[in-house]
Image (cartoon, rainbow, N blue to C red; front, top):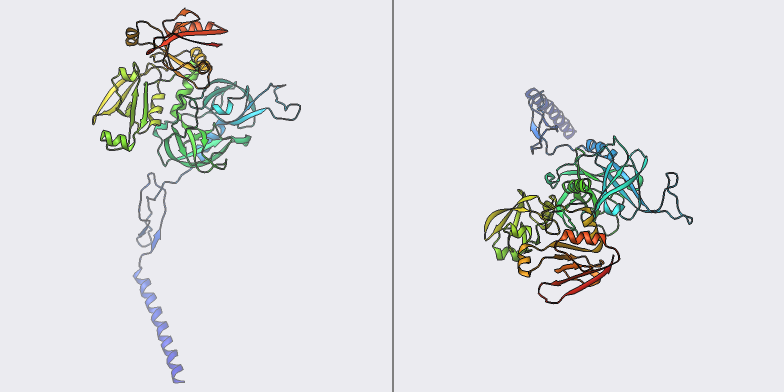
Length: 484
């Protein structure tokens, strides 16, 4: 009984002590510790747990990251992205029909991006290349027929147009200013589902994935992890403002579905290609006239370079723009017009932004010292002039590139003519067994001294064509013939 009474007394005393201590703490008004998260114009790192003054909680103006809002970009981009069907056949009363066996005449489909209010649309060449009729479905489900304005297989781009005015369109952003880690949106119109939007970040720039087979192909893709699936080809890659920074072109996958790697042609290159096609009917590409490769450990060691950044010149073609500007084998190009080039794709992209006859400033490293040179770019026939669409189409159909002999070659050979610089494998010219560096002096027994006369005769001639000429180091005369 005594023990029980003792326990009760101790419990009462403990309860009274607890009440007294709690009242004392309330009287002292100890400050609370709170967590506040507030938006801020610029992201900064801060400790989000700080003491406040009594009855006046301290608001924070800092947080670890800026809130990301995709609504603006998505709302601007979706009306300007269309669905494209490439079909084989003819319209009947404005509609396409399956054949007698119920087979569809659709060869391929994809997406496209409206880039002007009067109906110009850019897409991928592989989306439309096999069709002879194009059907474009707008965001509001209205369908229009489109015509092809021009194609560029070397960048997998194509420009088409519908007869419409007052269309919503996207503005080009500066893709050179896009940064790794920046949020982007991939907007497509796959399978006519109305515009589909996915988000991701820029994972890398200047990616070459070796998917384009054109001999002058340029692959300097923006890589993102925004989900892109079949049917999104030709769609828009936009920033959070809704401005165009790329045309979605390819994914890398083993399953046939999106696996985290998508690639877009950068907008600066897209704009150059589109502007050329609209103005000239074809792409006017400038060339340095060099063979290039990335800097390997061996090259860096032999040249005593501090890094692997830059592009190594393994060959400088005689009489080329690069040779005339003083560039040599072994030089390492580090920038073009002040834009750093760390790899082969970056150099190709920067040069591809200019036309034949344009002057670019090339900075390079030689014997441990930096120098610069002004290079006047040439066309693929090694002339500093724009090429006509007809000449480009004709030489492309036959499968070879040509140029005039330069003054040194004419002096050494004692005659003028036209030199074959490259031959496309599997082409009509390739079937004749002609080799590069063949010098053409006659076509169908008519003397030719320059490229303009050669192309004029070639364009006006049909049927059997005989090319006569020689190789520089061989005295014999060779004949190659084909039917045009």
